[in-house]
Length: 407
Image (cartoon, rainbow, N blue to C red; front, side, top):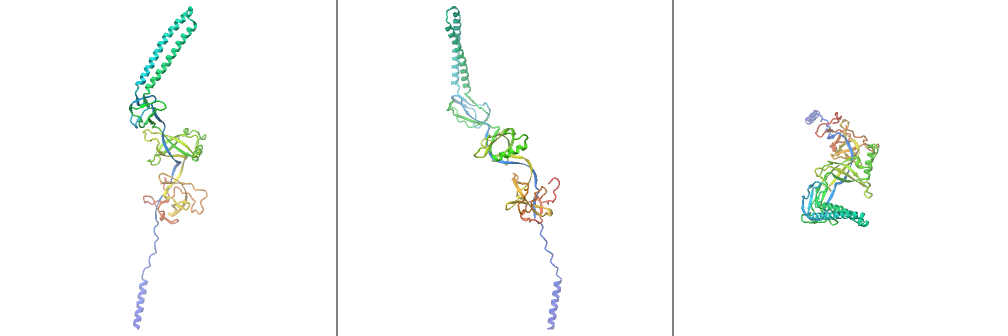
């Protein structure tokens, strides 16, 4: 028994010595800061604008009709052609009208012959009046006959001119330059002049072209107020005098790549819609823009100013407040409440100046500045007041201090 107890004590002693020789476990290391993509806000010139729906319209639209009766001999254009002013479109059979000119000329010659005879009779009676061979009334009548025939000759001359004009009207020409539509009548058809005259074709002018759009009364007053401040001498009542530029785009255009000048504003606000109709003039040398096309119109309503913009994906929402996360001093994520403005076409969001009174409970009332490093991607990995690793879009570290030039 003594030997057994001695062996047990020896084993316990060896176990204690072995346990005492084990190394202690190293302390647990904190994980590295999460990587986030940041971008510095940009300062841009910005002109406040409003967008409207509009439509294009031709400056001039003319319905081509015949001014004389006749049969169409030839149609001298193709449907959809561009035609110049004065170009012959339809040719009518002019022979009946030429015959009427000849009749009128013949009648004038008859009046001329009668006038010669009347003048001789007047001269003969005037000579007999002094010898007592004719009465004064006979002389006066002879003189009146001469004057009447002279007037008839003059009137017949006007009739000849009118008949010749009818012959000219057999060549139906384009009153304006533009694009002509489909011919409504072809060769062999009869046309009438007067109340039943048929439509032959329609021409619309091409260059320039008009863009119409309606502006709410509130926007109009806002523009007038801004212009009164910008223009010395107050607001001019004539829209054309101000040469206000606007931009517009078609349904297939990206953005508003086309430009024009507002040259007309209606003289009253429509009481039913609360809008006023405006019109712009746009160059259209190639005829690409067609009348009746829908257009998206953008008009500047205030003077150009400088604004701060950030990528729209940087904005986060907390109930009724919007905010961004920034990599602040020590690369710690901090929150800054913002007032978002208009979303621009390139995906950047305007940040409006902070209000004097911040919302209750806001963690930060300070404005975002161009030197801030705004977190654009990786919000879910960032924790407020905890460090992050700010990187640019290419994966390069972004220092806390912006280099010269703001880049």
